Length: 185
Image (cartoon, rainbow, N blue to C red):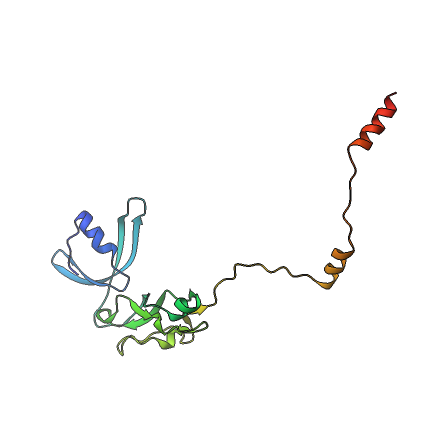
């Protein structure tokens, strides 16, 4: 990507880059392949304040975290009101900087029923980009919908106490007033 660092336009372009986006920085006529390492933003004004870059060698493999993007429609959500639980938001990979993907697209249409999940072992990026995370780690799982009703559990002891208990009657009013009136005479 080639941009001149001019205020708004630079902020708009750099703000969309991920940590696996390879860019070339031209500094006084020398070009440096780089990755975005950290971005700081003013969330109120929605502007980019600061960007850290890391110069990389195009001949050496690096470890990088690449973000996961879920796409598609899950039949488990549509048909069974399943809730999707995310396990991982990014995957650690090893590759040459020029082979790093911007993001890893995960299609959730394979989540057909409750209990179906997608794990790291199910993801294939490319032969050039091996995934370093544990194959059994979960990326997304279709779970049953949360129950809205709260069931009251009554133990046998509580049922006996409830049947034998009589309501307490508190008599107030005339008797107290009558008693107070007699003592005054």
